[in-house]
Length: 195
Image (tube, helix red, strand yellow):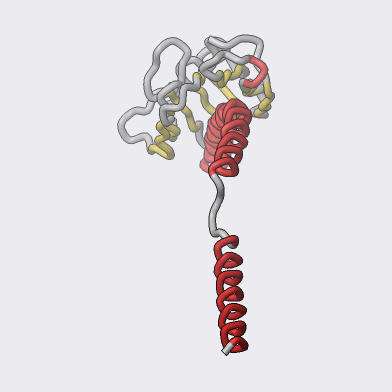
């Protein structure tokens, strides 16, 4: 009898030990561990958000610069291909701004205005993005054209350019697009002024 009691006690002790070992294995985090993880995540977010917003602003400038440069190249290549003047004109003429977008069209009468019967090649609307696209001077304030030779022409001459500026007027991160009389397009980071 004593022996069977002894076996029962050992068996009972082993069950209690196994139960205690089972309780020690936890699935989850303690409150302290969770607070530390949340604190680290918050610190990283505070560090990352300003640089992320700067990256987004720079990306928008590069995107508009690429789209506008592609439109200039399209205008020039269509003029060479068709053997006629092809013009680009802002959708809404207000001073020297091209803020709302542009139209590219075959300009058979060479006046920089799309008349009835002149084919529209591209209609582009700039999405609202807090950027400013302006002509640097009066040369291309209201229109610009490319001749079949590839040379450029505008209301005030043959060469000029544009500025793409950020809403914070950061001139170092803005873009300058220069169009030489030969039709060569040069894109540079930074401008001398922003509106």
